[in-house]
Length: 545
Image (cartoon, rainbow, N blue to C red; front, side, top):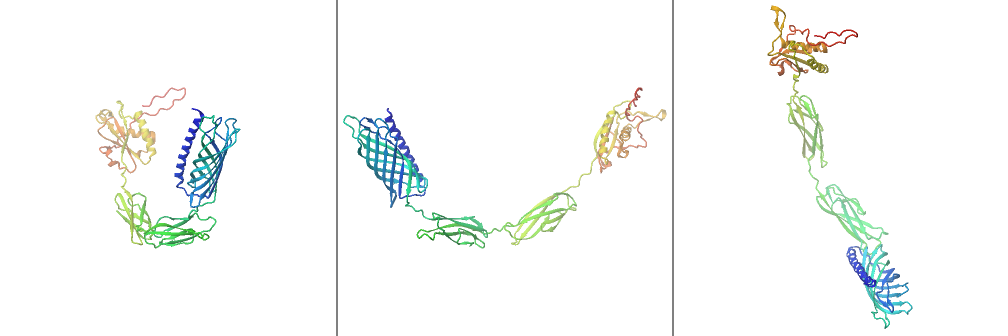
């Protein structure tokens, strides 16, 4: 297939695509505001596909050309116009060249819009064909085409595309065997000047109300805006309303006072007038709004307590916050307690917790406004139960594993007693009880001969442990209670007695008895004595017994 056959097919595809685009643009533009000039003058570049033959061959595409047209739109049919179109295409090629001039008259129909304006047209006229070295021939021509313009403003547009099919013919010599018909395709694009205007947009007005729904007594702001009025003229405004009082009736924006207006729907009407225009010089609009009756809301009440937790007998302060959503006056505030007595009025009251049992107490605050509407709020606090008295607890035990000296506090026990001493020094108000045990053990004998008696081993163990704390740790002996008990052996328990604890009533000390320290004295070897450093160059001292 030759390039001359391919080009028309490509051009046909371009024409179809442009036609579809023009239709779509026309559909979109139909929704736009109309622009209807009286006259259009177009001028721009033009490209021609002759698709025809001269005596020595087919004429190639002509890329150099210009097209101008003039359209006068009819007064009673603003989209239909009378068309005069002229184009000239000059071929600079050395062979098979031909200059082509076209002069056409016709009609054009155009969908005038503010943006895209598609158009279509039909034409008749003449063609002037000038092959190289031959005289020019004038032939009849007919055509049809279309395209679309893009409006830049009311005066100037851009012709995005113009596609025309034009038929003419050339009288070839008898030696040529091909057809002499020319089926030309002409493409053009350029600028378009719009002169005059048939269309005058009607003046319109738009009204708005802000807000569109208010409570009785709340203001409504209304505004009117005119469109298509002459910007060089000063317009006047006039307002009326059937619901409320206007702040001004001759301004673009006004405020409506709805005080005393019954619930319902209302409208504010505005008229905008251009007094310098004689005809079609005014437009009206309405802004609708709704007035609702004032609500009858009761007072809103909240309260807080300080402190939120107390011991019985301590006072509690109640603070209330009372408001009216409707702005009504608050006449009274009253307080009531679920237990105990509360006194006060206004925003503050005091609760006397004396004699009130432990547990939560609820305060109810009731407020009454001038319309006799009441609202309530609650808050609560807790009365704590009296704290439990401190208890005697076991904190450690020491063992007496020495079978030869079962009353003796060994080094392991001393370490435990050192920790106890540290704790007692940190809490000088606390005491301890040391309870010795020796169940099932054979007590060693004290004394000689007939005066020998069995040692009170349980008591001796408690007394010896106390002796270590007093003599070695410096603990006040009055802070140490020595006792003996039953049910254990080779042991002495250390029980902690915090300040305020009743040792005689402590369950842990039940079944124990006081040791008579006047009778049971600390052993001479109650515990190992600490070592002292030996002098230099002297023999080491014998270990303490």
